[in-house]
Image (cartoon, rainbow, N blue to C red):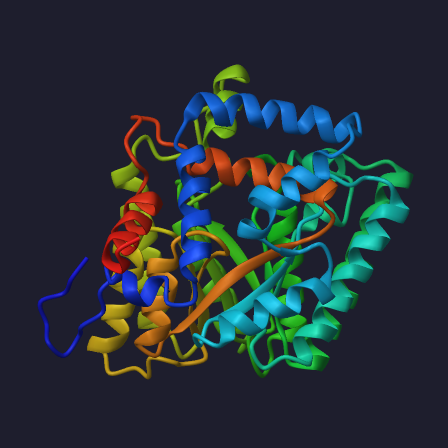
Length: 396
């Protein structure tokens, strides 16, 4: 995507910059991986087999995952493993957002273990200038049934109230540590029927820890028809409290699940009916954050080239420092390198979400990544097209 303005020469189609950190051998391996992921039937069968193989502890399953897709999409199995990935990204001026890949916990001991891992990630981030942010999921810190009941306005039992108090204490300890160490914390969004209590909890943490800088960020899924309004509402709340508002913007991760549940339970779908409406809401939110960048610290967390280009252009045209501390971009590790590395080359705050964790824990995440990259039409995906272009440029 080339811009005609000679003063604004950001170009997401520049594959030389996009894959500068990949050797010829790595590029060939990446090409083979994405060719596999463009076969819809193979991905579907492989995903099912992978889940069952991990659950049944079939020998060599983890070895196979480690040797194929794991290192493309994950930074490592633990924090120490991630250091090499962090350093390599920073060689190209790309920051790291550390994200522990545990999902779907409910046992209190497991939930405490997730909290301890996030605290360790914060400590590691504080020792790396290249890791300004750690990401966390509230659903990894509490039994999700409690969030669903709270969202629905149902009364919690005595035990559930105690467990919610434990959640509050866990989140407060994490945010306190992030504030103490000068690290930011992105809190992920979840399904719409869990989100209201998460929003309120995160806003309470902002009021407590965003007095002088953006420590805590909430995430807004802009495919949801209410989220642009919620983002503006929460900004007003922060203005009234004289605190910095932290907002990470994504399009959304649960579209099929949201629409299916709405149909099954006979209520209006909370999701925009088409991509164009979602794109408009996302770009409107992004523009709003840039126009208010002195009081909003935001992250354009998207693989959409047009939205990333819009944010970069607005920053440039408004004469805002490209590396303004309130304006970040982020893509998942292993995806959209053409966006991340070209943004970094142009001096913007570009980052990669680096998911890590034991292979058993991150299998659901890896399956989502392979499914996202599967071409529905049978044509090469954008990723593979760019990889093929770079291989041709190198004469491989």
